[in-house]
Length: 321
Ligand SMILES: [Mn+2]
Image 1 (cartoon, rainbow, N blue to C red):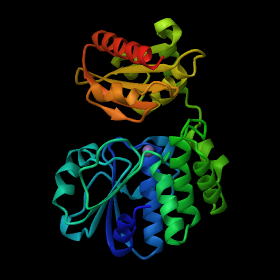
Image 2 (tube, helix red, strand yellow):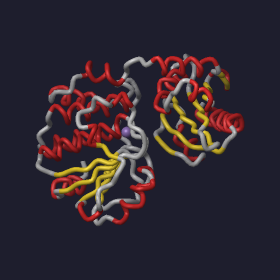
Image 3 (cartoon, protein in one colour):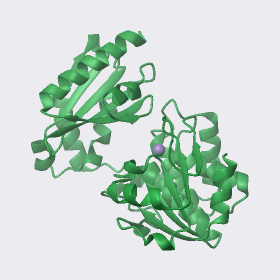
Image 4 (spheres, protein in one colour):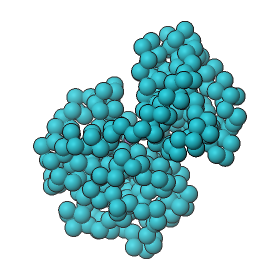
């Protein structure tokens, strides 16, 4: 645990909590978890997230506190950037505000070289930002109530693929046990997060219809055209099951799912089973992420982007073999 980050969190009374744009379970779980922890200690918090909040996280206690608007800078004593370490990852409004504030702390588990913040704790050995905050709270002796525990458990559960990914370390399980002891309900939470939505199943069907195996079956490629997303009224978050399904095909070591964007670009989500570092491929494409889950944004059209990604992944597979 970073002593500097802990000191910042213990000394500030009015705290702005910011996570990356288009927040996922860990971004929201860590933000809300920290809010509950700090408010139990009498602190005042604001929560900011840019982009849509996925409906499966609607159950998180305090979610209504997450706003797409930032408070006036003079009210903020300390800003905390969670689950990313660059202000630009939090969207244009946060990118503009954060560097102007006197005090900023960062807690994140993504790879990279953090250059922002006075107190920075970035450690890719952790499975989730939520896990980092749970460890910090335990070490600091902060009271962990059931609401904070539920939020942090959600972040840890989703970032470990329900404790199945390679990042599900002994520590992740120990932290999960502490969170369950503190009142997180794994069954209730997983029911909410993994509820089967017809839209998602249909979208998964479209992706699987176009499944292509390359590199001798070690590479799975899928794509979703803008028209498919529109026809099913699907949202980007609805595609998470699809990319996991691609990676789950026996023999597949890396998977790529390409999604056509309405501005002519293409979003690519990359997954690996662990041997191939897809974050390196993502970085080469101008994106980033983790060794086994990463993403980037490319220029269109879809077919050209697909060819480019397929060639890069095939090379990465050759190098890993
Ligand atoms: Mn995370």
